[in-house]
Amino acid sequence: MGNRCAVIGVGQTAYRTKRADVSLAGLVREAALRALEDAGLTFADIDSVVLGKAPDMFEGVATPELYLADALGAAGKPMMRVHTAGSVGGSTALVGTSQVQAGVHERVLVVAFEKQSESNATWALSTHSPFSASLVVGAGGYFAPYIRAYIRQSGAPGNIGMMVAVKDRINALRNPYAHLKIPNIDLAMVEESMMLWDPIRYLETCPSSDGAVAMVLGSERAAAAAAAATGRRPAWVHGAAMRSEPMGMAGRDSVDPRAGRDCAADVYRQAGVTEPRRQFAAAEVYVPFSWYEPMWLENLGFAEKGAGWKLTEAGATAFDGDIPWNPSGGVLSSNPIGASGMIRFAEAAQQVRGQAGEHQVAAAADGSRLALGHAYGGGSQFFAMWAVGANKP
Figure 1 (cartoon, helix red, strand yellow):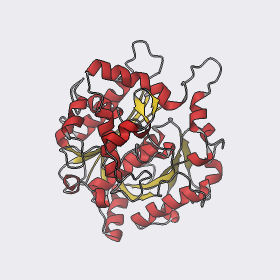
Figure 2 (cartoon, helix red, strand yellow):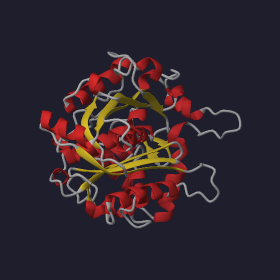
Figure 3 (cartoon, helix red, strand yellow):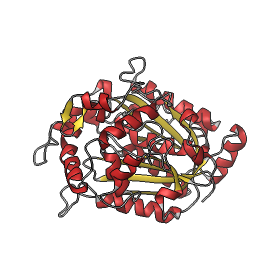
């Protein structure tokens, strides 16, 4: 793993349908300044900046990192851009982590964002270049057949996706940054919402959000200094990994991708995790469509193949369950695409730092268990994950 790395500062913007009050530069700077304040630092203390966002065609702004350098205090410093589709927020955090673990830098600022109000993501995901397959009317059109295949293979009851949608939206009511807040949501409200891509209904899908998130990652020495200055403990990285697989790989299982299983296995090996359900106190997992909770419960080893839906049905993943998934409300409640993966990583870190506010999971704050951050992107071919804890690995 190399040198130890810790999250020493976290900053998020509010996630909203439209942030007309700020430009792209203002949006990323807002998150970065909050992360720096949380770490007790300024831009002058940062050695390197790593930026992530979804494809440029989402907003029609090519290589936005070139003009965002000034807003992020990166003029004259090393700066790089990461792009791995929807998983890019997680991948960006891991690239910054590797700079600390390799001993290249002491303090790295990682930032991810999306301003969907200035884009048309469904158009961007529906068009296609010559010699490549169309994604068929947005992400939901692509993923719906795999959800139907999961339901058929597992025998899951038809209401499981609705249960996830209700759970995550109720969790979002505790999160001041969350985009969707639906106080009276219940199964009937979800069932009555319009069908978008069978079996995905309107309230079983993620919103389009504007927003940004930033983290300051530091070495062991930087973490000690930040803790002394702020009184807030860091979140230590116990395991981190990325994996990918070609969408056209022969024999590929799109319901249960091998890259996801391999990525989780690598993170668990580094972190000493052999029983995910028992050793993680909370998990922030990329679930843009509700049915992906039971599918990822199996892919990440929290349940046997075909049994993920049983954990959801039993309430195990609820806020008061034995393994809460997405206590922040998850991607179903806030979805600035390029930032969504890093939000999962940041929320996992906040859980073990004891800084998650009203959506704090008590078992995550006592230091005895880890938290999992997860992101996936593209056609389920990019995965990024980390395990973080309150104690040094």
